[in-house]
Image (cartoon, rainbow, N blue to C red; front, side, top):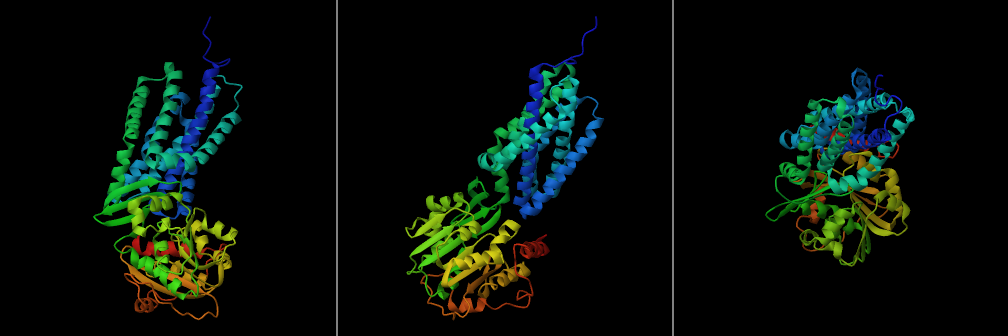
Length: 509
């Protein structure tokens, strides 16, 4: 009497359940790798919309390649286990290697997109191989659509967990290694269940890979610290990931710098050249300054300048990230940089999306100061749109004045004048600039109501840079940075991020 092939009339239920749970786990890990790659690329390369689009396209096409290649895998169990080992290694180390390559050579494309393609191909092999394994063990009750259902459920769990739990609590490098270890755990469980038909070479490869990824995860904090130290010239005194961005503060002697997602926000050696020019021309033009709105500027520097005016009664600061405002309010060494402005009783801090907050609110303000991030993607571009300016105008008093930072008239000339043209759709505008060594030549645009005569009030005492004479000179543009014939920025057209990207790319890439 011959032995019956294993599982031909029904595999052990534990094996069937393991394989379906495995489908859920590998789906979570695969999408996490994709989200990590997209976040790393937008962090290092900018333009979130473009980078997420590239990453999704490359990953999905690679999955198609992997699904096609799975037909050439003769042993589904061995192929699946080896795919998990490969994902554990490559997926686990992808973020780390990309950051290391950027720190050492500033090269990102090859390690990022190369590892992404391999991860996508290996992920594309998983479902076909799992389906073959289930069929091979006689799991007749579990149809192919059950496998797909678990796969899609895993993608949902990953998408929900990534921004809420994974990035804030693990960071990108540790998250990659943790999910690499998860793939290796799947490989280990499958090795145990099918140990009779798997060779010692596969088991040894799994053991080595697990030791490498596990060791790297244990040392992920000092490794991440070393990577960040290589990216910045000065000592890192704070490095944390909030729900929205990477926050890094560096210090050299008494010189402090703030970076958000690797982009410098201020350097204490020259920040007055930015913040004084941002705040005081608009404050001086406004007939009344009792209530002031500041959008962005969670570091409190702009609020500090606003509070120099004695007639200010209330300031509302609206910034998306509570982690930034908390740092510059609660940490003494950082609060000292803004003279404790966020602790002032006149200041209300609101953590909200600026577009929605302006749209939904009803309170009126005398001055609005827009210290917002550069319009490098569609999400930020909406804050420089005609529609947003129209909403903002509704929140200003009849003689209300606004000002926005507008990027560099030298490095992104067309983008700067698009912002000016956009402001000009709702107000009489004045464009001007200041040289800030950390940024280069930087521009601003004020807006005041039609028919209002510009009468500048005396500036507060103690300013480091701004004077009436320097402000008058700042309104003069040469032929290379002067006005351009450009369209306004609208929600339906968004010429601003394209012009911004084109300008900076022409200079620096």
